[in-house]
Amino acid sequence: MSLTVPTELPSRLWKTLTSAVGIISVRHGNRVNVMSAEWSYFVNKEPLYAAVVLSPKAVTRELLPDAGEFGLTLCSERQAELADFVGSFSVAQVDKTTSELVEFGTPRAITTPWVTGGVVALECVLRETVPFPVHTMFVGEVVACHLPDAELRPLVKHGPMHTLGGPVRRSAVVAAAAPLPNGAVRIAATGPAADGPDVWRLSLLLPDGAAVGLGEHPSGEFGDLLLDVPLPPGLPPRSAARIKVERQGAEPGYARIAPHQPDVEHPDLTTSARGHG
Image (cartoon, rainbow, N blue to C red):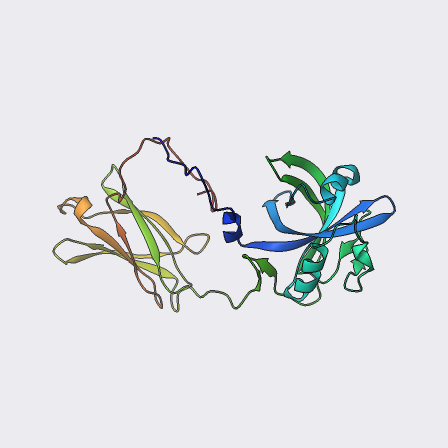
């Protein structure tokens, strides 16, 4: 299958990304430089790795390989002014740590101090440098962390800097269904926590409007649903039927049993754990 790739992309398409705002601290000689990095992420769970992506303009990009370590503070919403300041000037222009908004915490595992006031501060040992055509990613193993005494809300970038509101409340079930060779159907569903018993009620919806109950089933390990359900014999072709999944306190979810998109060649894919999809 061939893909059509646009010859020209909008120049600021990357601004559609939403990401944490990080402040990097890195030693150079007996001094420490700080800069903000819009692209700051966790990239591995065990061991915990964090990455920062820096442009060619960043002097820190030249300092990091020699330092072999760095501090990374994921900013709180209180640090918008500081993040803007340390991202606006180079260490070649001014020592940004002379700002009274820059306060350092004492490291435990590395020699580089970390900037206080964020939702978390990480001490990282540089493990890998990944060059891209323009930017460079620096990947560090998190060897120590520092959490604030009280929970803080993060500062995020989505074009301008933003703060976060309350959590999004899920109100609807989302479901999918796949026919199996043995005449059963595999049903997957997610949704908000049930108001009452932790069960999912399944129904087969026929073309004539009739509904065939497929029972109530408990949640799996992660609070969602994934199971194979035998279908009653003598039903019309499954391609004409739908699955309805209900959960108390939520809008029901619906799934087509027949695939919605054209068949394409692909390897067999299996997943062994949540998050591998």
